[in-house]
Length: 438
Image 1: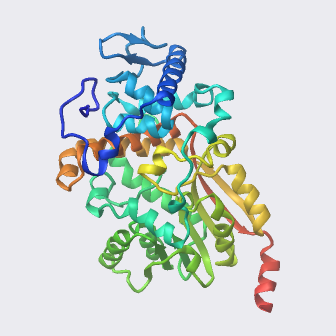
Image 2: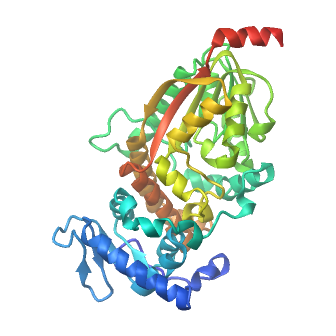
């Protein structure tokens, strides 16, 4: 088996071995064969009605976009193994098939955007009902307990600060940016400006200014803490990533803000005190469904009377969230173990049921995330040699390109969204009275 490039032709590379040895085994047997036949039939039927071209090893093409040379192209280098993997483990198999070079695309995000736009129809409803019976379930080791959360965070964020610096902008911000325009498409030079604009919107909405106290849950590499401190705020930021803490502390020191910012290796459940603003940017996705009520009550507990909570959160449709909640996905297996994307509906339900918080502002920015991810992909692809020099092999690089493309497709198709949500105590006056009597 060989690994193919992002283009239409497979290329020769190192064999799949070491940490990737499990990928060399394609499921076999009667069940695998049956799954292959079902997936092949469903895939061909779906593609015929989609604006997509699929190329087979002999050069023939099929699909609804076959007569449109501008439609996205997906190349099946090994159709049988592709269908077998997908039949055995669903989206995990789909992703692993890309990692092994069984399929490729000149623009994977374009292909995945077409598929994501039709996700509800790709698998017939009767088969969707069997999802929890035939697909792998969530492994217990990735549950976001205190120990599990640390392990999950290390898996992703402790890869290497140098690695992330190769595709992030100078702010080292790893979340959706907020551009001043979406058309024409933003350029690389726009990204750092857009990241600061996103942060400033959150700080403004949370009322962060001179003399305010800020709790940040999920430090990243420190840009939000730095900008809050530059406004005159005192910031306590917590993270579970040792690598992020190390670089964030260095960046804070370089900015001359060590007297205003503390960055701790600490679980959000262990934070005490009350703060004028509690801010958390795209960290809730690591909390896990079972721990969402506790996370929300921690936010409420840590918020001072009259203060505000600013959340940036990735969401997905409620019905899809419910359908996939118990199953294990490719992103969870390889990229974000323990990750869970809530729906806006479930967040509203849990906030109402478990807290005395109310929503006072909401902004959607999913298409901004699509552009952010495209810029990251372009920079990551251009840095392939440097990524390799850091010790990340070709299989890892294909995995990471697919992750970025997969994410872009989710936002570009509208299947995913990113929201900035601003919360406060439902009755600030009553909360103040309660605080006085405690």
